[in-house]
Length: 329
Image (cartoon, rainbow, N blue to C red; front, side, top):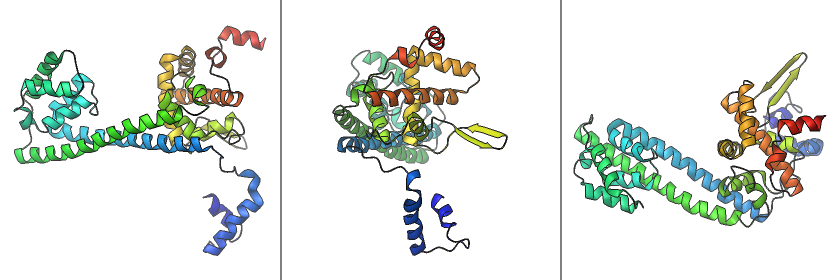
């Protein structure tokens, strides 16, 4: 869109050619170089972390998609398996649920397995306690009467479920390998201790943060630029007497995704973050708006800590109301 607007400066007819586009692109840098940011000069270690962290994030999204597809299919012909998964954790990606579905991909197959087979599956999945009791519960759930599809249809759906299960297992294995590689690489970076000093930020989330913001400290002129890049800062549109402040839609989606999980974890680990979130909700913000405001606050603290090479401090990031009033006085 920006290049199309530049093209209109040279021709109003809307004509287009490769030569004219080359001239437009060259003149963008010749005339407006000062309004464009140069490419970040990240270190080789930061770029390698970005490759691994983005690959791990992509695998996580693919695992979620495969799990949702499998859940939707099981809902059509095998609700007992969903009930068995919900009886343990509700997550179809757990080793127990995947092993159980591989053992009995259809309700007809579930009627043929014994408690000993289920107990064996529990042991292979890594469970070491209360095996017999859990096996009895799963055995009762899988043999409970339920609505069934026609036999051939049920068999075909079982074949499809096994293929989706294979995809899910592949993505789970990819996440395990990539997560280990991400943590090992991120541990070598000088910003590791600073980023992980924040509440709710472990190695995985910290690596994804570093992957998107990089370690070139001249990339963002101020904290406001970083907040806009992450989508935490709002967009202001002013024209005459009209002033509209709205959510920023154009943003780095990967960084915004980290902000949501960061906020969820920080609410339980940081009293200041919990008080800030509650204060925004009391002021009338919705859940998502309050989370964006909290993410905005954390990004400002992160920018300061990385610039000054200091660790996060709760009392500085979220000072008490009494201390804030005394400082203002």
